[in-house]
Each structure stands twice: as structure tokens, then as C-alpha cells.
Image (cartoon, rainbow, N blue to C red):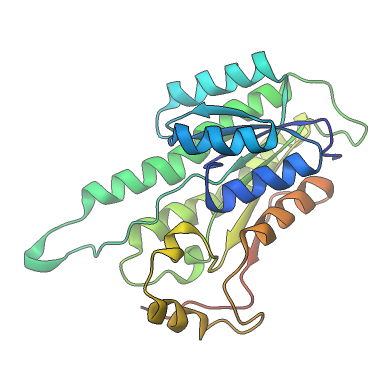
Length: 253
């Protein structure tokens, strides 16, 4: 699919992987809507790229539905939806003094998994209402998993479960939407230089980088964004999860 002139939405587009993706899409000529809970940061990125910022709680389906309707009204029919919004909280299943983390488990799944599903659902319905392009496509959905879905570390049960579900739904979703010409893909990023990583002590970051084979560094969010645009451009990519991780495999902790 040609990106130029297409309407694209990016959740979590106010920072990190999402912001890099917004900038890449805009540079390639897309009309971009930024859906983020942080309205001020979203507005700043939108101003930078000439996009549309919408305060959205992806864990609330009514908030997602309203955002999609606003995009349709102000920018037009959606062709690309990229889910980057997510939480990376860590907690043991049974912690100190027997404290359970069931509340955190539910919160992480509501944002990471339910949020991705809500956005995919509402965006895909809008895509299906549009005429097919020359390639036969009506739209592309890209969800963000994580390498933790295959090698999650201690304390990442909630996070890994949410990302594993995102990875697992790629193929059945792609099969279901095939007749309507909507592709569904997932990207599983490795260790990237995002705000979450930037907050770590230098020695902690150095220990993380030590396990990354090549390139021997944290990923650049622009590299995630590049892969997202390559998926959009290649019509034969469908129903798959792509790891972008410099060949790293996470140790148990």
C-alpha cells in the first residue's frame, strides 16, 4: 500500500515507538491521527507533523469508538492502524508477604490486549467500508507484541500474557479479514531506547545491552517505525509476527 495520502492512526503516538512511527508516517505523506492518554504530549507531536491529536483511553471501548469517528470526520477513512499504546509494569504473581498482583494483571491486559483489540475492531470496520485499492487492500492493522511473548522474564507474567495474546490473534484476525482485504500483522520489538529504558540507571542499561548480539546496542524507535512502513508497503505480509530484536533472547531475569 502506498502510504502517501492515506489516513493512519497510531495509539501511544505521543512518545517512544509510537511517536517515531507518527513522524515516519507523516514524512512519507500520510495524514496521521495520534491517539494517546497524554493529551499535551500528543498535541505537541501533532503540531510537529501537522497531524490530529485525540485524547484516548484505549482500555475504554467508547473512547476508542469516539476517536475513530472523529478521525473519519476530520481526516477521512482509515487505511492504517498501528497499536503502540501499552504498559510495561512488572510484578511477581505472589510477592512479599503473600501479596498478589491480580489487580496489576487486569490493568495491563486491559490496556495492552483489550486496547489493541478495541482499536483493531473499530479501525477494521471503518476500513471495510471503503473501496479496495489497486492491490485489493482496504487497510492494514499492525499490533505491537514484544519479544517477551516468547521469552518473558520473571515478573513479566502480565506483560508477557498480554503480548502473547496480541501475537496469537494475528493469524486468526488476518484469516477472518482476508475477504475484506484487511491485513493484520504484529511487530515484536526487543530492547528499544524508549522513555521506559531512559529512566533506568546507566549500569542497568549497560547490563541489558551486554546481552544484545548485533547491533550491540538498544534499538532506535526509528527502526521500529521503518519496519511498520515496510509492512504497510508490502502487500504479501499478513498474519505474521516479526521480531525486531538484534537476535537477543531475554534471560530469566
